Length: 217
Picture (cartoon, one colour):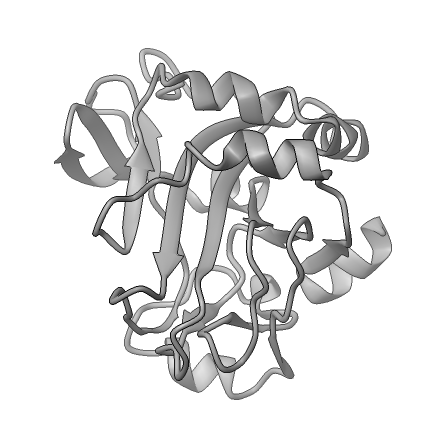
């Protein structure tokens, strides 16, 4: 699994979430009428996700990894969108502090976000926990395999760099978990059918941030 991950930037854990796990996550993914919702620091969902057996197994394969940010997504039922090729390079922290290498600051709700140095991003994972079937028709995410090895890619070069890679539409069944390198290029096309497509994104890290910065968990 780790060898495949190093080569492609992704690995699948099929059927990793039980029916009970999925039922327990239902309330977490209630985005109302929004396509996505950040789960604020201190929300009980953070502990709920960390205690999932599948997440504990991931923490054994990548020692020390803990959830540091949660975002829920929902397509269907009048919610639809597309996102071009990009990398997600933003982390959530408790408070803003001027630390070398950390920039592009923004505040979303009560939480500060910033872009950390590349070395921190290289060590991070982001997971997709699928609550519904994800297909090409209902807007499943597409990833560029191996793109994590390109380092930081600017937004204006993301599509060109993705075209140099083999791509994969992340078709998934409810309960599947996709593990990705934080720097994997990905995009989301609009859904062509109205079937629901809900997923929970979990960012994970094993690194402490330099003082006085702390993860917003």
